[in-house]
Each structure stands twice: as structure tokens, then as C-alpha cells.
Image (cartoon, one colour):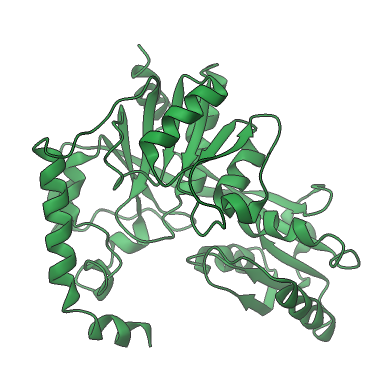
Amino acid sequence: MLNIIRIIASPLVFVYSLIVKLRNYFFDSGIFRIEKVAAKVISIGNLTVGGSGKTPAVIYTANILKNKNIKTGVLSRGYRRSSKGYLFVSDGQNIFSKVNECGDEIYFVADELKIPAAVSERRVEGAKKLIKDAKIDSIILDDGFQHRWLYRDLDILLIDQHFLTKVGQIEQNLLPLGMMRETFDSLDRADAVILNRKFSEKKAIPEKVKKHFEGKKIFNGYYTTVGIFDVKTHHFYDIKEFQGQKSLVVCGIAKPYSFLSILEKNKIDFTNKMLFPDHKNYSLKEVQEIRKKFYKTNAYSVLTTQKDAVKFMNFAKELDDIDIYYLKIELNIEESEEFEKLLTDIFN
């Protein structure tokens, strides 16, 4: 059905392409002014819509800066949040916003990293206010590749390896026909590229797109599982403790394939699952449906993602009699020392 909708909308690709080219031309020629702020800016973005792994990359990058005692914060648009304008989400110790007000990703990042965080549609305004509110020396700009109004000292582009191998397929077309926000030509703007293979084996860059990566600093990213945590208590469990158990799997992420693949590899039964759209804001009605299916299927537990878990924390009372856990994963980079040097060099 989705492919049929894309094909019907395919004539709009020309219009979208023209808009993207004109916009980039205005930035490149100086007609649109790119503004600097009083902090180093590291942008982490992608060429496609959803599922490339930006949030794990933000966490990986922020932890490096934290370990170097560099005062850093995260600025995001706050996708699908209920609020508008600038919102100071966290000062690094306290979270001042509810998850629906700021968006699931930034709430998750602020809770996980314990660093300042904010959301703002206008990135320049948001960056200036975050610097003032949190007194930081650097900003990680989440999903910033296309938001060119704000000058960045380092532009990191994240590409899903699985998507990269789909040469000649419909996905490698511009929106609305395919999944691409920009064409591969836009790699020229990137200072570095992380090829995220997630839980898959490493594959070579396809010959047909290889020319776009020439001369670029290429890093190879992959996921590892940290373990399974209780949503309510955050108690840690080894993933082996869930092997052979029948869980009700619930998630609302862009590409659930990787999540389900981890469960399958670890012999966790996910026959019973409820898959929702990306950035799903769960309502009381949907929580009640989850409860109903949990009891109907005689599941041992509800198992979800860490991004979904922050939203289920709002329903602690409704889920009080259900064991609900989240799987925690993290990004690793093979060339970790080189990546760390790339980040820290901008402060020298």
C-alpha cells in the first residue's frame, strides 16, 4: 500500500528536488545567512527519513565529550511534541518537561545522559537560549544536516547500511517517491560519515554510489545490546534471562526490524507483538489494549524499546500489575580513537 501511495505521488519528486536544490544554492551562495553561536556545534543528521540511528549516535558522541569534561548540551526540534517554540528540557540534573511536551527522543537523551537539553524549531534561537540557560561550551544538534541556518563546526552524516545497499530500488529516490531527503550529492557537505550496520554484518559500499564517499572520513558503526531493564525500577537483567520466554513485544519506532532481529537472535518469543508508528504517543486507550492483549496471550512480560519506555513511565499506575521491560542498545564505532580525535580537534 505504501509503495502504491509513493508511486501516485511520484510526480511531486521533481517539485521537491527543485526546492531542495534552490534552498541549498541559497545557502552555498550566501543568499541565506548561516549564523554562528558562542559554542562549538556538532551536527548529527541523515539523508533519509527515520531509522538511521541518530539517537544512539547522539548519545555516543555526547559521552565522549562528557568524558573529556567538555560542557555540552543537546538541541533537537522535538519531533511530534505537543509544545511549540523553545523549551528548556533539562539542566543536566532535573528534567523540567513531560515527554509529550518535548518529544520522546530528547526526553530519552536527557534522561540517559544527564546533560542539558532543549527543543526548538528555530535552531539558531534555540542554540542561543540553550547556551544562556545551561552555560555550555558545545551543542550536539540532533537531526541537523538539513537545518543549515545554524553554523556547525562538524557535520556528521549517519547512513543506514541496509538502506545503502538498496541501489536501484524505490527507497533510494527523493521524497515522496523514496525515503531520501536529499540525494547522495549532498555528502559533499559532510565532514564525516558513519555507516551504521546496526546488528548486521559489514558490507562494502556499493559501486554505484561509491564515488560520493571518496575523500570522506568513513566510520563503521554497529549496535551491541546492554541488557534488559525494568521500566519502573530500571533494574538490570541479562538478556539471557529472557530466552525462551513468551513476551508481548510493543514498540513505536521507524524500523522495528532491528529490534525484532535482536529478540530473535536471543531466542525471545515475540509471536505476540503490537507495532505502532514511529514516535507513537500512547494514550490511555492504547495502554488498556496492551493490558488486554498481555493477559489474553498469557505473556510473561511486556518488552519494549528504550525510546518507548519513557512514555510508558507516564502509565505506572495502569501498568502496576504488569512486568514491563525495555531493551537497551548502544552504538559502537570500530574506529573509536579516530572518531574521538575528530570530535576533540574542533576544540583545539
